[in-house]
Amino acid sequence: MNIALTPAYRRGIWVALFGIILVRLFSLGAYPLQDTTEARYAEIARLMLETGNWVTPQFDYGIPFWGKPPLATWLSAGSFQLFGVTEFAARLPSLLFAIMVLFTVYILGKRQRGADLGLVTAFVLASSILFFIVSGAVLMDTALVAGTTLSMVAFWLRMNNGSRKWGYLFFIGLVIGLLSKGPLALVLVGTPIGLWALWQRNLTQVWQRIPWLSGGLLMLALTLPWYILAELRSPGFIDYFIVGEHWKRFTVTGWQGDLYGSAHAKPRGTIWLYAFQSFLPWAVLLLFINWRKGSAVRTMISSDRPWIIYLGLWAITPLLFFTFSGNLLATYALPSMVPLALLGAESWMRICAASVANHGQCKPWLKKLPYLGVFVPLLLLSAIGFQHSQYIKIKSQKALLTAYSRIKTQPGGQLVYLLKRPFSAQFYSRGKALEAKNWQQAMTYFYNDKQDYYVIKSSQLKDLPSYLQRGLREVGEYNRYSLLQEID
Image (tube, rainbow, N blue to C red; front, side):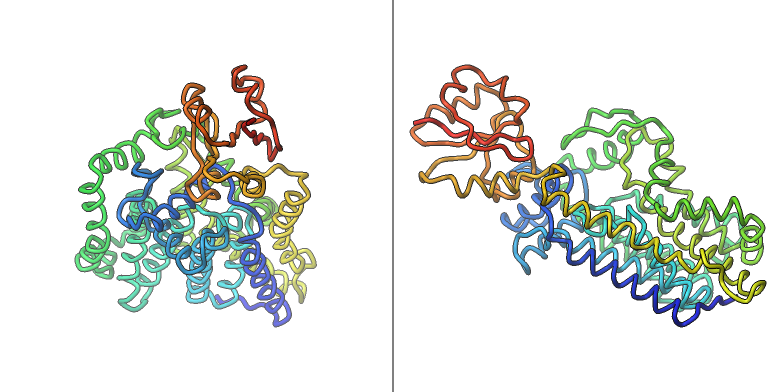
């Protein structure tokens, strides 16, 4: 059953969707890269461009980064090469991946139920809080979701009389996933597809329609060479990435083997709370629809059971998988946002169609639903405004590095971060900011013939040894960090 929107309603949603994308585009360079994650991945991409090492991402000069495959890093480094080393260039690949996801789900909705379902789905997804945030953040998760979404959409379309190209696009999606987050992509795609095939008892059809042999060889040809070369260039990568990142991170709470930070220990099951928060404001609508419109939901399920089961398995697989993870981030819920947007759009349009059939028009509250789409973009714009007004502290060293470049007058001096150097300091100093991990190491910089500058968290000023306190004076405080100058 195709469900059509009125022309005016359709135009309104198109305007809102493009408005959301434009807000995200023009906000990419409007605020500094945030510590820790954004600045870390941007610095890894900057290092890749500077050193010319496109095989092994580097955590710091000469230190390999084994935590993730390099697809997103390749794209950010390439963006730097085209547009310069800026926040805009660092974030642009994530927005392009997000647009790819929106276009892919639009095609799926259009093929399944008509162009209006594709439009509403893209609008709901684009205006959900987590998707909107990550579409302009330097993260690997947007690339992963672009890959898994392409695979899930391609599989469904191929199984429903789509051309053979969809069978190969299924494997291209896996390539994107394997080169952005690794074997996790195989789990997030293979589990719902396998369960759906068993549920529908059509394993034979799945085997016949998907080019498993030629497509699988294509996937290996596009991914395996990098994995092999990465291990040869940096022995130990495979053990850390496969065993550590893909087993211990999810099974050992507070895993201590992370070489690049600390594990994010959370109570098991927290992923469900993250999923609810991530899908706001639309999560509230889905709960309301299921509570007040239960009969309509049951009708939707019974009218096209294979489709709804497919979406349900697609949505629940990441949540069930990460339910048992001992370490979590909110972005782990992102793969579920795509099928949830499809389910939400289906519910929205079916209830509106039922209202038109019974009352001659869509109910007023349904007509006003597109206004919910402005909530998240306005939230971001408000946050940017508050940051520029300094009502919100920014987790970034950009302001401090800018001040340092103005204050520094003597040539040869260095900028030294005491105890810990944030990643944004590395990025905004173009790798020139140094780090003294202890007071003894700090003294090696202190007793030289140059006027150096030091940075320390303002809360740690009181911990400075007396001999350092006597030789330094504070010249400014920036986002809870103090900039200190050596006294001649």
